Image (tube, rainbow, N blue to C red; front, top):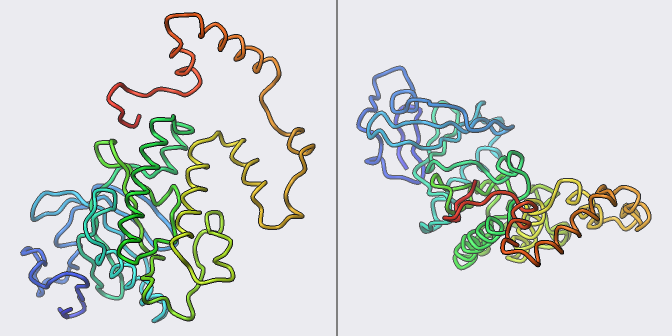
Length: 295
């Protein structure tokens, strides 16, 4: 780690700084070395930007804090995110870390550029078809297998943290803001993850690899079923028994009319006696190209 005026490079050698950077200039390292192409996302943490390196022409994603650090605790959390991500060995199903730096009280993390996250993809296309589901499931399992083999827990597995590759043929797990090393779990570990995906045992116990597996299960449920059905299933998983609906309550809410059910049953029978039974499956499942890529 080295210090250039108010620039601290983290998790990378000082020699890896862009040769375009000039200490004497008033502009920041980010301003000197990158062109902003667009905004990939916004959140309480700041922005994720689509950028192009002025040095190489390569495109990346840069996560940039909008505000200076409000406390040493928040600074430590962002530093840990970068350190955790950087220590994971490269894997095709994990977003590649490039470098991180702190400048003028703001934190930056540079990673490889990916496509849409699963949350946005599902919002646009609807529930994933079966081939897509298996791709997401297998690729995320491979990412978790690598993390767990290196004693790392992600602890924030959810659709918005799983990204499509740019060629739309694989998925990559990203965002290591809550990741921890199993060998270094602090006594004051905090369960700050998204409660919608968090394993219930984390409320009372230290985390294990099983917590990531629970979150993956909820994630697959969310991206694989229609919104209405997902909401009903999630209501059954409420941690409070009193809040779980009765069978009568759910039957009063579910929405496929009997007429539609009858039509689909007839189509199923017809499809069994034709040369094109796959037509019915396409009608129900959506479009999927012959090469197996995402839509």
